[in-house]
Amino acid sequence: MAKSSPPVAQLSTEDFMASPEDQDGVIPVAPPVPDPRKHVVLQIVKGHPDGVTAADIAAALSLSHPTAMRLLRELEREREIYSRQLRSIQVWYPNGRMVHPHLQATKELRGKTYRATVQEGRSGPLVQVQERSYSLLHGERVDGAIFIDYAALDDFVQLLRELAERYERFEENKEKSRP
Image (cartoon, rainbow, N blue to C red):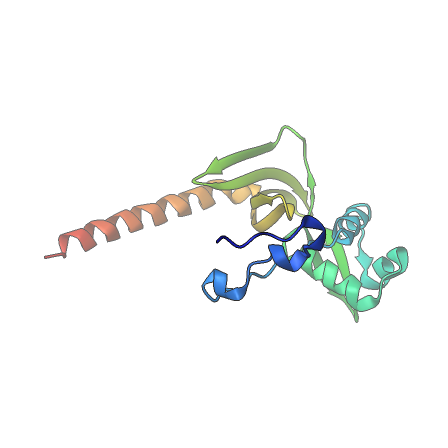
């Protein structure tokens, strides 16, 4: 005779959770939830092109200094901001401003999204290329980025073409050397 199910009122959340045995020994771990304060920190830095310190951020948002530093470093890793050491103080700056909204292009290439923008830099215009991703859990985020001086853009494109040609020759030679 089939085992009857308990009434809904007697069920607990544990009844809906798979046991480790049901998952071939793999216990799922939830991905980290993004810190909503990071967006606020980014807006503060963008609003202060002359720079802010971690102490400024900590005071403005009632955060501890280590928390402010962690959020600033995460934004720096994502290339949203950069820092300079001025004597004994680290100062954080926005990574440039877009010259014009029409000087932005987004393209999906082989399942990855790239955004290129022309931005104002301290020594002239820059092209920023970001690899971006989106998930329901984390929203949109920058996975990596590079900046190229606009004046050197043609040289950079030439570098990529030369690398592509070398790779194609490498692959051709690899195919020829197979028995």
